Length: 465
Ligand code: IDC
Image 1 (cartoon, rainbow, N blue to C red):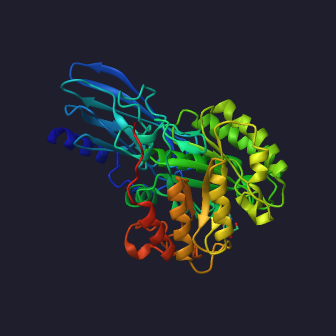
Image 2: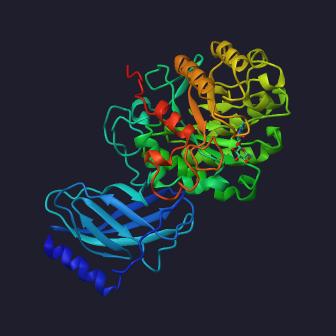
Image 3: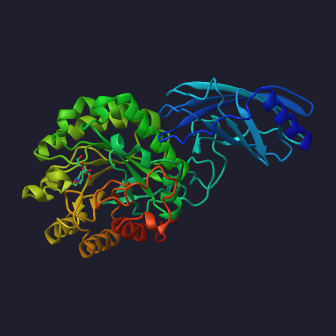
């Protein structure tokens, strides 16, 4: 062992690799690894590792993986700075491959020794994010509750598996109603620095969130300015959520203009792509229009009936959320109510309707509509705020508590605006938090963040039979 590590060190020195720059954390990731044993002999082998970056361009990277058998040791590696500690192996990019554009690959390799079996490595990560495209093998036998993160550790996705709508509820793989509680990103065009390994770890482990909503604005310097780039950012977040056993809500964040038909062609292009790419995953939910406004229910329904088939063609079993009139208020903000949807539902199955509120602006009459609608329509609170509808102003603790108690009682899923450090009271973190690596100490939370964290982190009670 010592000799081998010395050999490694020597090799690295000879290649001039010991001073390799530490990899930078990347905001959006996603990766695929092809691993091949190119030759094998008694006690030794040579392997090729091709890593493909499916996420945003990287300017530094570290590939991690685990060698399952205690007798497997790396002897000499190339095209990366290699090291091994117990079963954990890392390979950091070097001068000539440190920059990896989206869809670009680096080819690495090593020779190794083994004593017993020589199983393929597992749990490939790139900058800490699971390479879910790796090793196209069947998942290990388990309880059927595998979230695709390579283990089965009781995460929300492990427990609940592929979701579906049953009656007016969101149901898990046991056909039992569940409630998902989580957070929404801010606009990915402005706050992608808030969605790194540390912040996603905090969301999964400290907040114990079930859900991350990826708010991909279409206008305001969003998707329309760089479709490939934003699609890749969203896919990176899907992977980061999956690696931590959380559901990912892909939000096509239309806002201004309010008629989603303005973005119909973009929506078809975007959803065809993300649905095809994520079809095999169990953790993805699609939200096709954030907040329709200034448009009739008939207009929204027509849009939904054109976009949903595009998703279904690629990903037939995913739940789809449809926005509602008046900024997803079920029409209340336009002086209407849920009856327009009840009387003319979207012609599709396995769908839910969005209901959004901002607690300081929307109170009893909105709660009354939600209560009444909840027994008639499957509802999902894909966005809400503890503050006023501007995203700012004072937090309304009493109204927020009344809302969350109601949602808990009805098992209505929710995502709070926002998991970001935006300089506005709806943000969960104080300005300057993002990118700093500390999303966990109490000092980083705003008043709203502290309230939401306390609500979201209580134990889930997901039925398992
Ligand atoms: C707000 C953001 C703010 C941004 C504004 C315009 O908090 O920083 O300048 O959007 O893009 C919504 C929308 C959501 C709004 C939020 C608060 O879905 O995009 O975010 N809100 O105004 N509906 C009701 C409130």
